[in-house]
Image (cartoon, rainbow, N blue to C red; front, side):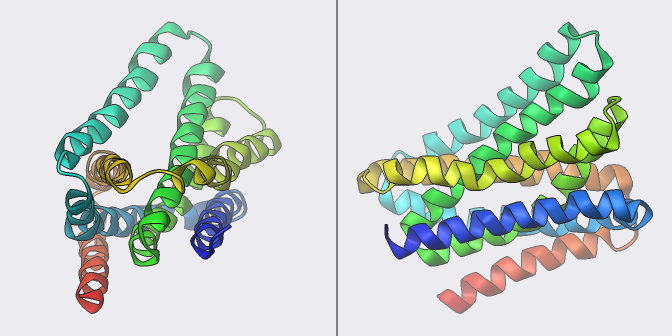
Length: 243
């Protein structure tokens, strides 16, 4: 195994730890967690969107001339999957536990598994590319753990069961995605790797622009815009420092 694999696995494991910290925080310090979640969301969205446009997309375009099509495919794939989960399945499920708790948990679990694949892709391209993507991804794991736990509790699951289900779905799936995908990603050629990188960028932009930011707008808390701009600034500074 290459050094890139171990770094990718370490990053995805860190993401799992941060997710677990979010789950623990909302259970132990529920008032603090609810009060500050929006700032993590805003900062993470700023990093993810900026890192995708400033570094990940140009990198993928240089590796594959058809990268724009894969970018669009990555964006719309997550959009359609999200619509399928929130609209089609939830409308067909009258059981509150299935609707409010279990189905979103499965969706978050798949999303976290895909996050693990993104770690494999970006760190295979370069350690810098992986690190840049990981900053935003790791930071958005904290509120993701909180959200997963709260959805399960609101769906009628006990606090203890919600704790374990949230850990399995939102935390453990990320390093699992890295472990499963990396042996295959490390064997592929440069054009296909560029396509996967563009797909990843589309997914990251979707998460940042259409999943995280709307939550921030609903809350409209003081300093949320500053948190978002801080995330943008971090991504810009890292790219400038690299260049």
